Amino acid sequence: MTLTVQEVMAELRLGSRTSVYALLRSGQLESIRVGRSRRIPRRSLEAFIESGLRAQGADE
Image: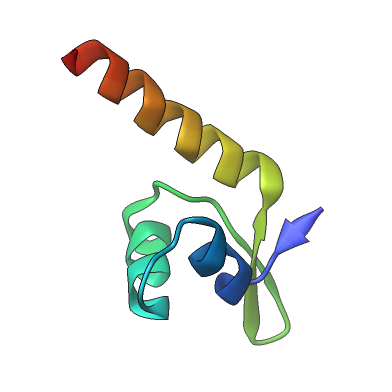
């Protein structure tokens, strides 16, 4: 299953699409192109969230 940039923005509670595109450009989130739009695989979003949680746990 894939998500749109808008759906990822809502899941991560980000205030702008620019933030999602920055994550895509940096390679922190994977995406595929469908026509002119980007789709983010759910597994990529889940891996990103888990890596953030692991990093947060290491800081505590």
